[in-house]
Each structure stands twice: as structure tokens, then as C-alpha cells.
Length: 133
Ligand code: CO
Image (cartoon, rainbow, N blue to C red; front, side, top):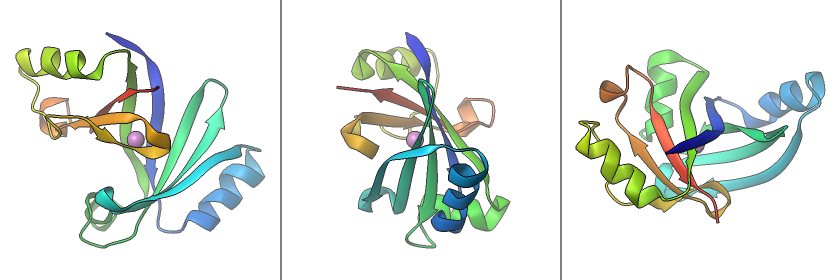
């Protein structure tokens, strides 16, 4: 059902200094930058081979990433898995007892269909499913 790790989401307080690190020290290239109003973040996707790092800066303190930063500081925020059929994957996970945050997919960074699952039911790790066009 999960075909690969699509990306890791990293919560940061400042996108430009994060870019200076990942672009400068590690030579990663930005392939996308976008504000996602419904998630309350500005996001940058950095290509790492066939996978991606998603740098997330809250645009509102009361957004999920804003609350995460307040509680934990910068760090790994979520892990995202690629699926071919996100509706089927969500139904399968829910039937297996996983608590869903998004019962229907929404549009995420770069136009992908995404859905989050609750970290309390995934061993403390906020987990995301991603279906790419
Ligand atoms: Co993500």
C-alpha cells in the first residue's frame, strides 16, 4: 500500500536560514515554494534524490506547525508515505484502527492529494499519505 517515503516534514522558524543550511551546507535544490493557507504554513520542497524534504514555517502561531514549534522547537514534524490510491489507503488504515485527521484527502504542496493520520495512533509520529498525479 505504501510505495515509498515521499517526504519528511521539518518544522522551522525561519525558512531563509533553513534554506541557507540545506541549500548551502548540503547543496540541495529548491523545487517548489508555496503558502498553504488551510495548513497555516509556508512550505519549501527540497529535492533529495527521489525523495523530498519539506521545510515548514508557520504563518500563524495557532496553526498545527506553530503549536508544534511552541511545544517542541524546530525538528522533524511528520513523515509522508506515497500511495497510489489515497482513498483506499485511508479506508484500509481506518479499518485497521488508525485514527484519521483527514477523512477525505485535501490538496497539499505541489497539488498532491494528501491526508494526515493522528500521531496518537501511529506510535507518536504524525503520518501523512500522499498521492501524486
Ligand atoms: Co508533508
